[in-house]
Image (cartoon, rainbow, N blue to C red; front, side, top):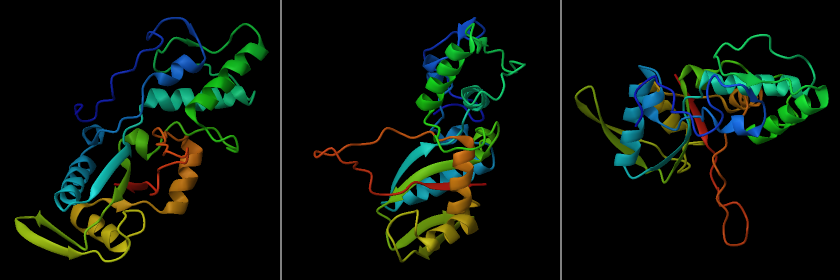
Length: 228
């Protein structure tokens, strides 16, 4: 697990501070973390206890995203703007050394569009990906919860607590689980409609899709977003 409040180590790609033309290789730098330890306190501790309680009771928890580095948000934001021919950045706040101008507009825009596609930014997006979000602040986690038991048993403030969670055995749709998460762990299930809108604005970091024998996606459950 990475240290708290610390972004993941950049993946192999253009060297920081070097003169590098924009393009898809930049998209593998500063990957979005899937580590609970990268979230900010006290949200980090609440999520850790929530996930521990779920797993101790037999539930399956798969984490898709936690902290998104500010550098990644910057690259997503400006690649979208350049791809739309709106404007070029006038500053490099993170000293990345990225060169957006390839010498002519056609090559510059083509490189930016390739980055937008590689980032998985929705073509229908009407505004640039946000430079900040709950994920950038370390205050959000996307995870899929399945195989929920009918009762959760866990320790809370020195006492053993039993919470009945009848309903769908997945975290996306179980309202009783959402209430328990908020009450005992200070972890709030994000409003699905609002979160979907923010995802469109901020850009999406999708884990690889698992494909079954017949070539169809094996993903059967929706990931839920939880925030502080």
